[in-house]
Image (cartoon, rainbow, N blue to C red; front, top):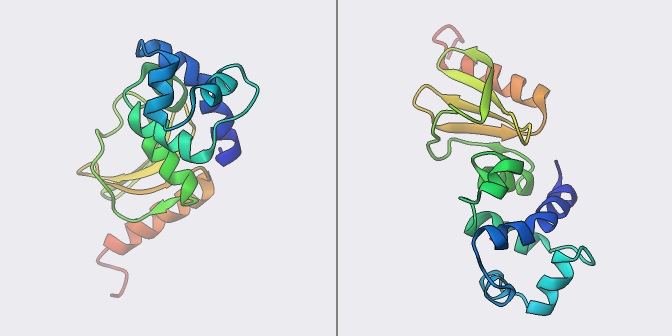
Amino acid sequence: MNKEQMIELISSKIRLIRLEKNYSQEKMADIMGISKKTLIQIEKGRTLSGWTNVIAVCALFRDSEILRSVLGDEPLEIIETIAHNGIDRPRDRSMGGRVWWQEIDNQGSFRLQQNVISQHYRILDDKNYRWYSSFEEQEALTRLSELFKGESPDDGE
């Protein structure tokens, strides 16, 4: 998934998110920081939301069932992965992937998971801290091997 695809996806769901929260168009526009007229144009599919508003929607409505149905349990992780073209550093602690994730591979104390909805990959350690996120499977597998080798006492370091 890339920025353009994410913009199209979220733009098409803004009306449903607004209705899910029982917000008027005026209140939703105020929350998003846009005019009511712009919101109406987005909801009718005449224009797309901007990247900044997509980020705002994912942050402000991350508990939305509509968002979770199209992005999985962590919309902000997907936004961050797209914005940074992947994440490659220890990050916040996750729930461990009990619902939205399938295990792809395990190496040492690290495991590679794929989100069943968004299809992006992440690497978690045995305490469920996220170390890496990407939409590229081969890059994720390579990074999993690198992390495993980094924890192995036999690597000569």
